[in-house]
Image 1 (cartoon, rainbow, N blue to C red):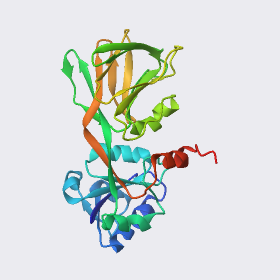
Image 2 (image 1 turned 90 degrees about the horizontal axis):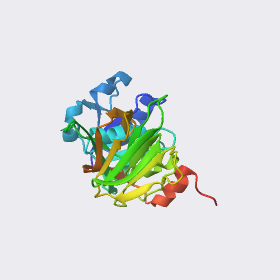
Image 3 (image 1 turned 30 degrees about the vertical axis):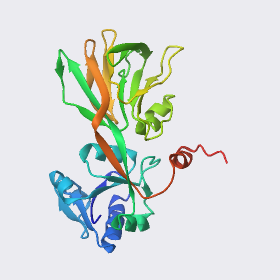
Image 4 (image 1 turned 90 degrees about the vertical axis):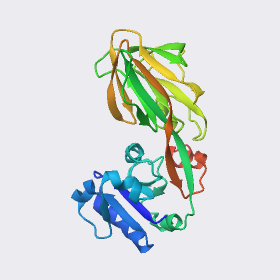
Length: 281
């Protein structure tokens, strides 16, 4: 690889310094470094060429994402190019490098890396027989009650067969990638990234028997409100729309995938110990 687009979180501390360090390290290796025009407001950097958002997939071979997991999730929605996360945030669970590991950029130039594909979710709302534009999520789709609203009663269908009714603040449908995010905090299980499964986890359930449900990634999941209320739908932290009684929220594995660049040989369990503090040694 020789052409890299930098996509930073403009709100991170010392953002211009971080961009310059990454760009300069790549230029010293003979790479072309690009950034979208929208980031010119951070201050122009001589080592960088600028392009439009529409040109990204044609002019770059990979995207280097500077920030935390939230910045990586947004990048996954915007491009189909391989992503390399460089953690300038806090946890950085799905980031590959720390901001100090610029010496590993040589692995990119030499094509000494692996590409790891992660499944995405496809979500649509069906109202009065009309299906809206699909949205794709790498981590999760969350259906939740609004602030000050009472608990939700939600029917869950799997491949159009009734599965259960949940009394809860919400439901999280997650990919294996998202199983270490919000769903984990809600009591869900951790899934290995390459498991062909989706997980459904209730948020603050008001029922003794409520547990996470793991289903095949080939299943179609539908959520419907069982009473005259409304609920918010959020995908990877992005508010999409509300659903009402009579609406049907359909979620399934999407045809799109997110590709991550991996230069480390760490196992998934090494990352769990490092990022989630589960190492008891």
